Image (cartoon, rainbow, N blue to C red):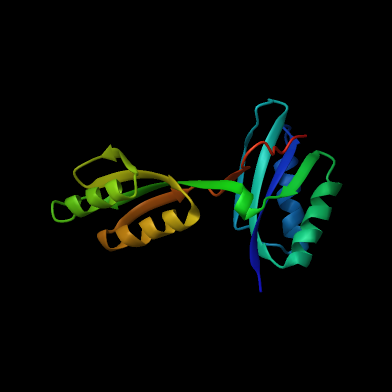
Length: 165
């Protein structure tokens, strides 16, 4: 059965690296569930977090292929029990006098916040684990989702363990 894996990779912060990394997945027929990229504490490196589904063989092949890319400096499968994962959601929901209080209650319960308010819409920001994000989306769906965007998973190991180049 396919399991979700999260990989952290430290790469050179230069043009074309993301294309080579994502291209490797495409060429091998692997699907990416989530991909996030951002500069690290050192401007010369970026951190890529990739989530995907597969079996242990697929995971091992992906790690080996990533290790072969010159600008990939470090790759690690992140253990879900030893990793903090988060995702950001921005979601615009229809605002009406009939549903406003219910939405405001959901915002409070999920410890999210309204970042834009208009007579016809509420834009809500929510950060959390994927299951929390999914649950919030399902809860507000009946009120009318106008638009939404998700960042994808970002992940960092707990404690003193660090992914370094």
